[in-house]
Amino acid sequence: MEDLKKVVDDLLEQLAQARDVPADAEPSQIIVSSLDQMRFLVGLEERLDAMLDVGDVLPFDLTDREALLKSVHELLVESGVTP
Image (cartoon, rainbow, N blue to C red; front, top):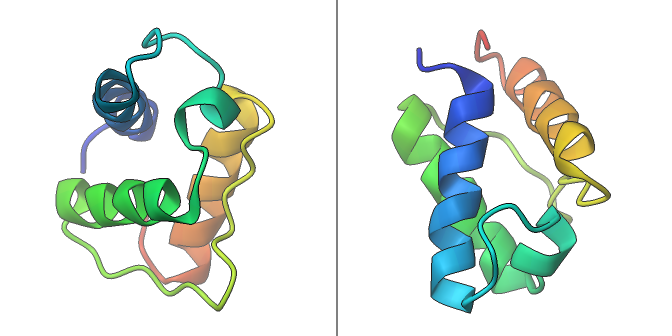
């Protein structure tokens, strides 16, 4: 499995380019809508070759990159995916 931090950073960079914001912007400036969150989730599933179990509300903490990485890690653990 790819390094999780690299996967998250790469996905944020892709989404930032589409939104025309700096690649090093905070996640809350890159992922601003539920559609962005879905794109991020689908990107994670594709890159990690895993099906992630999410409820009605997407579980991403967009406070900062470290918080986002932690929430992605927790989602992987809850989904039974070894990070």
